[in-house]
Amino acid sequence: MLSKIYGSALYGIEAVPVTIEVNIDKGVGYHLVGLPDNAIRESNYRIASALQHIGYRIPGKKIIINLAPADLRKEGASYDLPLALGILEASGQLVSDLLPEYMIMGELSLDGNLQPIKGALPIALAARKAGLKGIVLPISNTPEAGVVQDLDVRGAESLLQVIEFFRGTLELAPQKDTDRQDNGGSAKAIPDFSDVRGQETVKRCMEIAASGGHNLILIGPPGSGKTMLARRLPGILPPMNVEEALETTKIHSVAGGTHRPGLMRLRPFRSPHHSISDVL
Image (cartoon, rainbow, N blue to C red):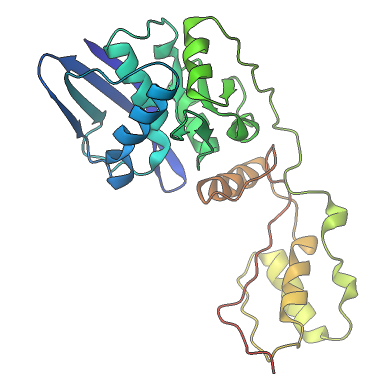
């Protein structure tokens, strides 16, 4: 029996829809194709353990899994959940009309619990662009995916909850839209540029760079105020528009750096050091 589950692959800060095709036939073997990396190739061990803990199993037959498009490199353990559901559907252990309507991603623990993944926001955007009804993710990723409007975002804590949701025996609470929430904190949380005493030339350069969108490099001995100035630069930058906020949030999402719901409305600060000086 052939099963098709929809997932996604990250390509930079964008996500590309991926179709997980699972075919189970007579014979013995487990074959995974479609340019998967080692983390995906090892997924059968995690899936087998997770299914066993919740009362299911991988059938002892010939299983062929294709990740389409086959010429696109797939990376990460976030394919565990769609692979497990594809095996269950192809083996007749799961029957649901909802599976083709959702994009599904999530990493499995050995006991069947779901671990958070990277790139939930671009994956949710890809699901909406593909015309799917919604997306199913680990529950810790749903606030981030909730940024996307007109998309049914569902979060689960375990593989068993996902199975019961698609069977119609469990209702996963939908994530409400969080587009208008502030993910970067309030403006009061940014250190004030007026705290800097002196350094008039440097402050003037930073004001020009902030107004003109230019790059800056700060060079000087330890304690001269480089970090103090850089930390206060976001406070004098103009507010981000929606496109800038969305792109910034996507970058942090793919890097695994988002922890709060909603778009990042304030420009982020990260330590700019290229090296570190010894403390004497």
